[in-house]
Image (cartoon, rainbow, N blue to C red; front, side, top):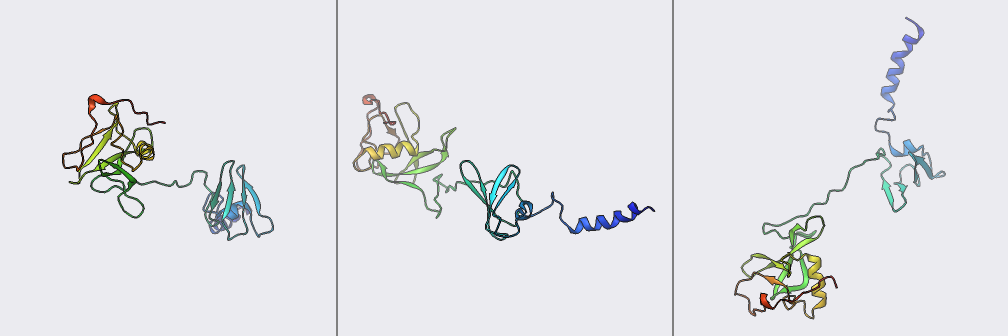
Length: 197
């Protein structure tokens, strides 16, 4: 055996005890941070700053700041936040506390208006739904026959005096005759309601 062959096993055992750069090397080790006296470091064209080996590592971006745990490796494509919308059995969106999410003070013929689980295609806007006395969810439609989103209802609610949006012409909703006051709009008398104003 040559001298090179004899060194090969010992170097292989050393490499297994030391983590390779591709293994799970912590971010502070990748950046070469040893103490608090050199807080700035660079890696892959990015600028990082930390207050020491045990402090979070801040990554500076043009528009925002990202905080990384010091003990985890730095990945260009890290885990992403998954936004989950919780919906009850009726289809109403639930808030963080598990309560049905409704539009404050907004109502249609006295019935509350809630966030429906379905979103308008291509947007993050939820459709608005009226919860009737018999626990049915019905949609509100504009003069074009399109369902109103919660954004539309907020705009109309803010234009109203008491949050009642059924007073606006051009809106229609299928609500049974159990409502106390039927203020539904006559479809023949509909006029253009510009929600965007």
